[in-house]
Each structure stands twice: as structure tokens, then as C-alpha cells.
Image 1 (cartoon, rainbow, N blue to C red):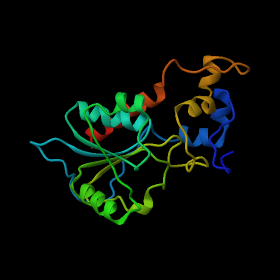
Image 2: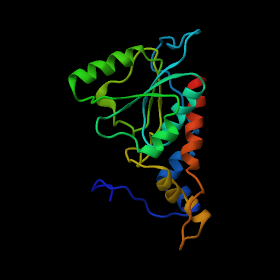
Image 3: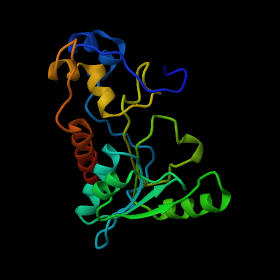
Length: 205
């Protein structure tokens, strides 16, 4: 399914997930990791709002940047032209943000984005590892907060995913129902919890 460009996972029990290679990789690492990429001081300065560029979609990343916006950050969300966030999700997660559309494959839009990135304190991304590397997003002193479904490691690192798939793969769906009739958490709790955790990590950077 993944090879054909689709999104699917096999239903697993918690024990099956823990015994699998990706489950072992996740369990062997902390919930979040911090890495210093350069010796430059963080760009954030006292006396002005934190300037955040938001390159996230759907829920976990937008919850993180919404939290930062509600705490006073100046958040600009960037979407691809013609592919805005779903209206209900936009109404929920774009509170307090400004939004814009830029095609990073178009030279003029890319120049605009580079100017925004040069002025930003924080960049938040919500794509699978490596998906945005071609855009050269690193800048000295820029805090980059990255979130993805399966992490940066293990055989699933390059896979796309979202909350419901993680619930099925890790055994939550079995716990909430059964192996014959899987269930689900009453909300997208993984996305929301991860978003709040990411916002807290940004504020501690």
C-alpha cells in the first residue's frame, strides 16, 4: 500500500507493536529530542513577540503553533496555493495566526519565503523526515521544531501518517475495542498532546 502511495497500517496489539522493529526503535528513545546544529545564539529577543513560521498540516503541528499564537507569538502559516487547510480544521487551529500561500517551487515565492525565514525565530514543520530538505531550511540561530508520525528513525521513518493510523499500528485501537472490532480514542488525543508538547519544547529552546 505504501509503495503505491497510499496510507495504511496493519492492526496490531500493544504487544505486537512493542515487539516490532519500529516499536523497539521508538521505545529506545526519549519522547522528544533536542539537537544543537550551530553555535549561533537563538534569534528570539526580549521585548517583541516570538516570530514563528508554520509549515504544518491537519492537527498536531497546527495545535502546536496555535498554542504559541495564543501565548503571544506572531505566527504566519504558509500553505501551498490551491491546497488550504480543511475549513473546520482551519477554524479550530488557525486562531491567532496570519496565513499566506506560497509555492516554494516558484522562484519569486521562494525568494519571499527565504526572506521570511531569515527574519523568523522559529520554524515548525509537520512533514515526514527529509520531505523538506530540498528547500534548505536551516539558518543560524533558527529554532526548528519538527513533528512526524513515526519519528526520524527506524524502518518507518520515511512514511507519512496521522493520529488514527498511529492508534491502529500501536495497539490503541485494540485497547479501545478488540482485535475483531477495533475502536478509537474519543478525540485525536495523540495529535493534541503532541502539539502541546512541541509548543512547550519550542518555548524551552
